[in-house]
Length: 127
Image (cartoon, rainbow, N blue to C red; front, side, top):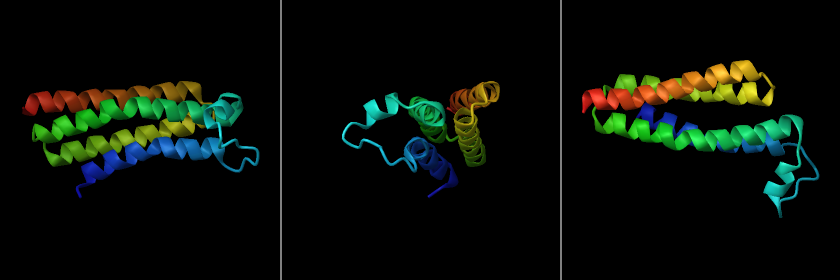
C-alpha cells in the first residue's frame, strides 16, 4: 500500500478520533441516543464533536482530490507529500478546535483547504 493511500485512510479515521475525544471518560454517556447526548455537551466535548463534523465534511473533497491526482499520474512524491500535509493540518485543526484556539484553527483549516485545492490543480496539470 502506498503512503499516499495510507494518508487517505488516516484522514478518513480522524472523525473517529474526534468522537473518542468527545466521549472519553464520561460515565453518563447515552449510547441509546448519542447524537442528542453530544448536542447537550459543552466545552471540550462540544468542540470535539464539532471537529468530528468538520472532519467528515472535509474528507470527501480531500479524498476526491487524492484519487484524481493519482489517476492523472501526478508524481507519487507530490501526491504523498500533499496527503500527509493534509493529515498534519487536520491533526492541528482538531487540536486547535478541542483546545479552543480559534484563530489558529482557522489558519490550519485554510492551509488544509489550500492543499486539497492544490491536489485538484495538480490533477488538472498532469491529465
